[in-house]
Amino acid sequence: MLPAPEMAAKPKSAALEPRPEHKFSFGLWTVGNPGRDPFGPPVRPILKPTEIVALLAEVGAWGVNLHDEDLVPRDASGKKRDAIVAEFKQALSDHGIVVPMATTNLFSDPAFKDGAFTANDARVRAYALQKTARAIELGVELGATTYVFWGGREGVESEASKDPVLALRRFRDALNWLTSFCRDRGYRMHFALEAKPNEPRGDLYLPTTGAMLGFIATLEHQEMVGVNPEVAHERMAGLSFVHALAQAHDAGKLFHVDLNDQAGPRYDQDLRFGSSDLKGAFFLVRFLEECGYEGPRHFDAHAYRTEDVAGVKDFARGCMRTYLALAQKSKRMRQDQEIQGLLAEIGAQDPAAAALLGPYSKDGAKRLLAAKLDREACAARGLRYEQLDQLVTELLLGLR
Image 1: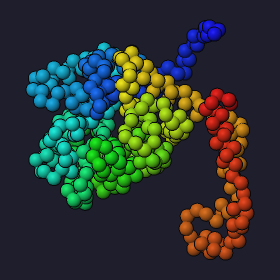
Image 2 (image 1 turned 30 degrees about the horizontal axis):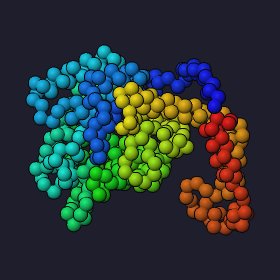
Image 3 (image 1 turned 135 degrees about the vertical axis):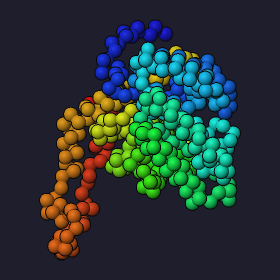
Image 4 (image 1 turned 180 degrees about the vertical axis):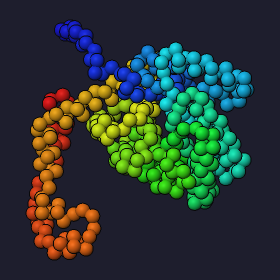
């Protein structure tokens, strides 16, 4: 067998190196995940929050996000809490890392086994409010301007256990209380609700981004509340993540976004961004880059359990590098004359038909109802979507 030829190392592309303006962030719980799963214990050392900050600075990230308990142990004294926070703030300053988003762990504590804001037990609901209010204060102290709510236990296994209307009222009451709390304290904080269809409960309330958007319209201070769509959570339900982003953006409610990957409807995988559905990731990046979204690109993903700490760094760099590479592909698509020509042909409008559309008026309705519209010609027209999709595929394969 002939020896494999030596491959020359490719020079790094500056365009694929993360910079602060890209606003790439990771959670303490993501790069700090030690590889524990339901079938086995940790395989990597548990890193201190300050060590995670140093790791993120090394790989070129801009921000770090956290649950309250990722930083401060659940039962820490006030003195211990202040010492931990001071040490963490010093690490942020030393490494030039910011905290754009914070959230509360309302799912790990056994007290939340039946939910937090929707629990049947009033004591649990009160504890959830207290814990969240204190965690919001922590987020404010660290400079966060977005607060994410993921209701990991807000759901049921037995439908007989809860009245779903009452559960939603309780969830609404909690968010109304917390938005009023922030207003009263003068906190410039926006809330972002994160949907998920199931897991760890059998069925979760408000399981999709669209459901969250409908719920937000019922809140007292809805101007403070938007959504935080997550790739894996939408795809767990077999839905298009780009469509969820589009609906949130169109409603003016895209406050934050969680990027990862998911191989179809199954358990929540939190895969490295772009590692499974590359075409889906491309259209996601294309949308974010072209819609005017200016918020963080947060990677809510975990390295494979096979990795050591060096592999975690590879994972984090890979998330950001794939995003930047796909952003380059999006720019290339805008410059591709054949693709743009085909899109122009597909989007061309018949002037007479276009004139029949628009806002309602009595005269316009009269003209529309009297118009002779050739439905057979509409049906006979080939739309050339096969060619378009192949051109996009070739673009992603580096053939264009």
